[in-house]
Length: 366
Ligand code: OSB
Ligand code: MG
Image (cartoon, rainbow, N blue to C red; front, side, top):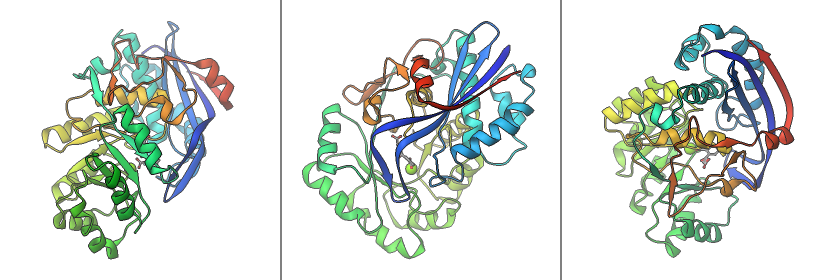
C-alpha cells in the first residue's frame, strides 16, 4: 500500500451533553485519531473509540495508546502490506485490544479505498445508497424533550439506556406519549441470573429487542432468557469476534446482532460477522460508540451492506457535537443518511479542528 508514515493524535472532544449509561458517564470524549499516509500524499483516517475508563469493555484510551505506540505500530511489517486485512493477520497473535487494532485498521481501509479511487461502501460491496438510522437516549437525557426532538428528525429506531428495575417505567413513559415508537432497551450487562423473571415481565411491552442484558461472556443466561421471551435478545459486548456470534447463534443466545467495527477489532472481522449473519439469517445492525464523524463515516459504509437490515446507531453529528471532525457533517433527514460516493470514507476531515483538540501526538515513519 506504499505506506510512508502513521500519526496518532489523542483528542478530547466536548459533548453537547453528558452521555450516561448505568456504568458510567462521558462528558468529554477522548479519542485517538489515527492517520496513515502513503508516498503519494494520500491520507487514511481511523479512530480508536475506547473510553477513558474501562466501563464498556476492558480497553481504555490509555491502554490503546500504549499498545499502538509500543507494540502494534513498531511490530507491523508495513512495507509488506498490500491489503488492509493483512494488518489483522499480523496482529492476530495478540489477544484482545480490539479497539486499538480497529483504529489502525480503519485508517488503512480508508487509505486503500482512496488509492482505488472508490468509496469504502462500493469497495466492500455495499448496495444501499441511503440508510435508515436510529438514535440512543442516555440516562441523563430528558426523555420527553429528547424524543420529541428526535421524532422531528424521523429516527427509525429508539434505544433507551436503562437502569435496572427502572426500565419498565421509562418504557411506559415513552409509550404514553409515543405509543408507536420502534423502541428497544440496552442493558449493557446490568442484569444477572436473579433477573430472568423480571426481564420476562418486559416481554409484554413489545420491544423491538433487548440488547445485552447480561454480562459479556455469559451465553448461557442469554440463551435461557431468549428461550423464555418472544422479544429478540441482541448481543453487543458479548460479540468480540466471529466465533462469538457463531456460538451465540448456535446456542440460541440471541436473535439479533449488534456489529461494531471497534468492538470486534476492525473492518476485516466486522465483514466476517456481517457475512455470517447474512448467511444465517441473523438480522444485524451497526452499533455506535459516541464517536466522531470519522468513525460514523466508517459505520455508514459498513451499514450499506445487505445484511444490515435494522437501523443502526448512526445519529447525526449534531446529536452529540457542536462541531464534528468531518465536513460536511452527518445529517439525518426523515430518518435517513445518504451514503457518500466520494473515495474512502467519503467526507473531508477537519484536521485544523483535530489539531485544536489534540492533547498528545506521535508520528512514526515506516
Ligand atoms: O452499548 O452501544 C452501547 C455508548 C457508550 C457505551 C456503550 C454503548 C453506547 C451507545 C452509543 O449505545 C450509541 C451511539 O453512538 O449512537
Ligand atoms: Mg450496547
